[in-house]
Image (cartoon, rainbow, N blue to C red; front, side, top):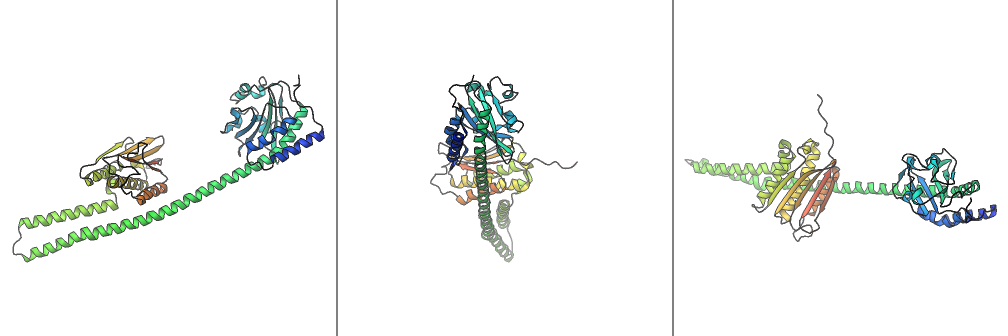
Length: 416
């Protein structure tokens, strides 16, 4: 039996008046939810409903989003639902012109394996009417109205609903295109910002590398070259003496060994031979040992590796970049953090490998000066190899943790 509370059937003039008001209500609405709320009052004057929604298909038609008025159900989730699970998928695929049912709870068209039909029962929806939203002949979504009563909607209601849908469709299409354009502009702006950030970061890194070359040149000039000059003068003095004692030669030999050690240190700083010869784990251990030696034994260092030799399968430029980040982080911790302990961890996190360098020093807000250029260099190196980078002080305010996360490229086996 038809619902006695349903609005009376409207004549053409009254229908036109409500449609004009719907069009006026849409003016100025900039999002889907605002649009459906704005027109709901006028739609209710045409069609009785306890629940109304507009569902809109994604660009590829594989998923949809619903915007509701009246009752709120899981159909209105902000997460897109697969079109194949929609109870009205036949309408959305253009297989039927409309769907009208006196009782959706018992209508087999709404219930099939995988159907997202739970809201029909949870919201006690019975009579349902669905018409397509079309633009240029293509279905972009659907307008749906539902009632708690049985057998509310007839063919005249289908015609009225289609009039409303024809008004809503181009407006929804325009809002969708505007949102696509906005999203595209945001993506483009973010891409430009990343490119500019990388450009500036690469420039800073180039400047830092140039400063490093100058430092190496100064180390060679001020230390090694000075030591070799002093040794040359010592040898010249020995030539002038009638007899050379073993003690005199011992001193020269010790000075030569010291110069060689200093030269090896400078070379290792410029080119990480330990990394190339013995692998990533040993190279990090060497960095930790150097940090401990530089602190006169007051610093405890530890390496925890749960990924084995996985890092050694990475391409050489990637390994060197990650090594340099660890080196910079350790230098910061040892020289500026006032730390008593530094722990480096190599661990797996799903498909990613995570390297963390944690110290128990004064933290980022501590009084000791921080090498901000060093932090910028670490961040830039990480960006250039596609790694995630984070530096933070734990909630207790003690210490600093540098974290680098990256999905290592799959190892390519050599041809047999």
